[in-house]
Image (cartoon, rainbow, N blue to C red):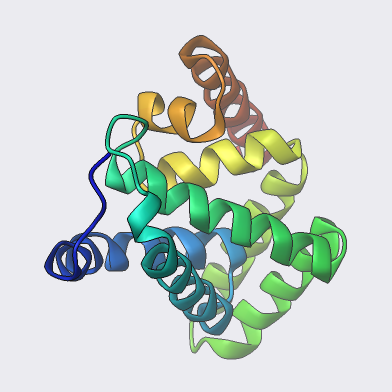
Length: 164
């Protein structure tokens, strides 16, 4: 077991905070919530750094597992994801100065995502929002690589059909 020391934790933050924020922002559609979840993730990681074991997972996988658990807790507190997707679409339209075309594209993507199962949405968010590799996703969610590959493939196929 090799716990993270302070300087290693600072490096961990420097290396992963921006990408993790991107994932959380992508997944929630809410920049403020993503910032809160990012802070909570690193707070939990800081408190648990003595228990980190490099033999069990990489630092990146460990951090994303913490973030994923926090995100799942948040989704449970906020209710169904369909309501969250509606809030994202409304928030994106109200909070951005983008043109009508971009708002329409977000709405189309939101509808496409709502056609996916929860596990497919999660896989897409981890792959494209967090930029994790398929093996990293498999390790993070505790599923076989072939399951994750199939899930991402099916989700992309569904999105292509929905979005056109």
